[in-house]
Length: 144
Image 1: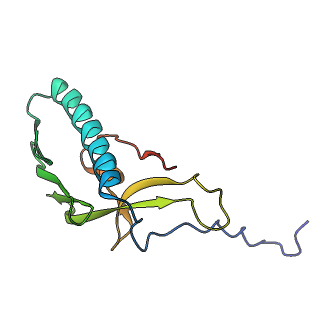
Image 2 (image 1 turned 45 degrees about the vertical axis):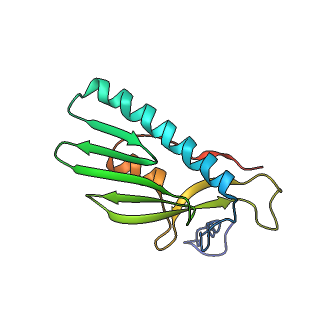
């Protein structure tokens, strides 16, 4: 039984905050980025079948998505920086780095999950795509 009539709620578990990109090789960058682009292209093409006013083009690491009443999104791979860049008519330009969560000292090695994160505000590319375009690409699989 609590000592006070209005007990303090339990402290929330600390959230991991991305402060720097995970060190990955160029091969890993290409693997993770290509997987995201392939998944995104497939989901957008499915959406395009239901709404033929949606335009999707993907070539040479650059994806252009034109959505009526929203505008044009451009996503592209930046291998020299190991980043994915997004130009959004809603949230503006962002540069996403690969970040692995869940691999701190007190967590199981190899149990982390990666995602493309904009380090300035902590937003994830998958969340922005879900919110602004309505496409679910999920996070990239667990990292070994």
